[in-house]
Image (cartoon, rainbow, N blue to C red):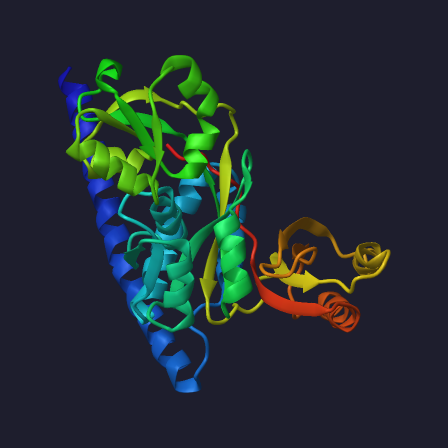
Length: 365
């Protein structure tokens, strides 16, 4: 109908006006962010203010009053805020490469698309690059909801002098991919050890007799599948686009709700955001009740312990280091007091960092 067509054109014209206004305001916001960066540089202040960012999100969610979907609203402003912050100073982020790994996805989710991403071959090398200041940040997997701790990351903390600066949770969907998209062509399945472990039952049931091979990362696996039509990889959705692969079967993980926690590492932890975690590395004196006494220090101060993980100290039989996550920031009086008491009672104490807690988990498409 002519009337409907005329109304449609009017609405589209209005949308164009709104988009033009968005663009003008985005450019103005970018200029403001750069001015803030210049002022902070003069005062030698940190470019990243986690408390300010959290206040922005809270204010926007409150003003939105649920009208615009919350997760897309967060994603839009996260990209805007991150882009404006990175305009003050370019940032390089190291991740377990090559391109299109889950670590790559987690890094982009945390920093948006404006950072410069540097693929590194091993988790240990990521720590090495950050510790020596060759990149500002690195992002590494720390634990998976199915397979537990990523031991190579825990071991690297024991050997490196870096701080945890943030965390990100990524919903993991494992796809079996190859060159053709046909399961009949699969003669070998390759991936990182964690995805292979998380899909072992599916592989045993649907590809019996097909051998598997562990490689450094899902990105390496995807690249192998792109080069050899007889190889299938367990890889991310980003790998499908990057290496022009076809999905054989989507979602082959053995258990639903599969998530991986990644942590951001750098040389300094950020200031408090008001919604933080603190991570510690401890070793107890060799005496009965040492662990209980240590946990009692936290319990008496009503400090919430959210995670404890042990790792053997290499070369010292029977001795362990413990990784702890607490709710709160080292600048909080009760956390500072608790850490001081722990330092007095423990054989070894290291503060690994205080950092903003991750926001609500969103699934990886």
